[in-house]
Structure formats: structure tokens, C-alpha cells
Image (cartoon, rainbow, N blue to C red; front, side):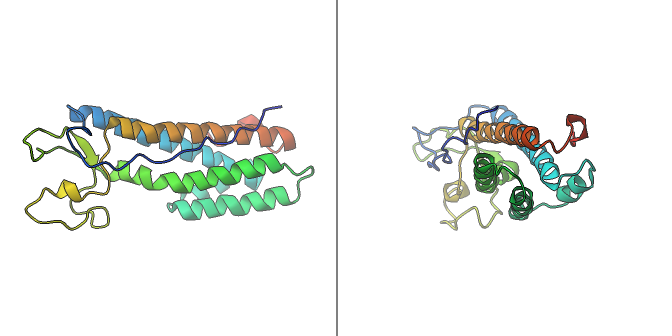
Length: 207
């Protein structure tokens, strides 16, 4: 039997203002590589959650997956998964309390991390000179038009100083690692629950 492992404790990176101590990358290509990796890993996670939804709907048809794939809101997706989960486990004997709890933790993590996925997806690579004349290095930051992500500052200041996040490659990789961990937990839950209740054959799952 696969031992149920909970997701590790996790917190987002600190939003430290660029300074001589908190520097960005010397080359924007490092940022863009990290961005591409992070977004790809998150899409793998989304694919795993689609399979989980199919399992909870107890159907070999891809219809449920296609319908789930039409939803863009992470809150709505989480709500759909949670509703399907409640129905699935309500009539299962014996009740799998460990995986039920693990699944709820996974859905909470999905909602919590989606904001940071969006930061990465909608950020731009920028760099500027600090007040002492040294270059900050390149960070991934919200664009200047992102009103909710950039505070109004003195127009004589560089807009970046009002940004709500400054990610260097290390910061982005921190989120990537979380996405990878969440996908591993998703696939573990699918495998363990499906083995326990014999819902679908492996070849029936959405690719």
C-alpha cells in the first residue's frame, strides 16, 4: 500500500526590494528560462488535476475532462473538484479519511499558488540602476499598467519600486518546485484511490 504523504509546509518568497544585497540576474535569458519551466510545470499540474476530476466523476469518458477544461477560474475548478470529491467519498466503504484529507490540502495549495503562477505568467523582465548608480540586475516584475500589482509612486521614481513582487530566477524556481511537488501528490492520490476502489483502468485516464 502506498503511504499517504502530506504536502510539505510552504510559503511564498519574500518581496524584498531590489538593492545591492538583493540582486537580480545578469542576463534576462536566465529569467525567461525559469519562467518557461515554471509555466510548463504548472500546466502539467493542471493536467494531473484534470485526471483527478475524471476519477472523482467515475467515468472513462473524456467528456468530464473536456467540460472541466473549459473552466478558467482556479476557485471554480477547486469548487468542482471539492464537490466531486464529496460525492465520491460519501458512499465509499471503507471511508478513505487519509486521502480525503490529503485531497483537501492539495486543493487549498492549488488555490494558494495560482496567484504566483499568474505573477510569473504576466510578469516582464526589467532592470534599472539603483540610487548609488549600480545596476539592480534583472527581475521579473508586473508591467507598469498592472494597476493592482503596482502601487502609485512619485512619478520621478522608477515604477519598479512600487511593484508588488520582484522575482529573480531563484524565486521563480521556488514556485516551480512547489508545482512539481503538487503534481506528484496529485498523481499519488489518483493511483492510491483508484487502486483502493478500482474505478478506472490506466488506459482509460485522460492523457
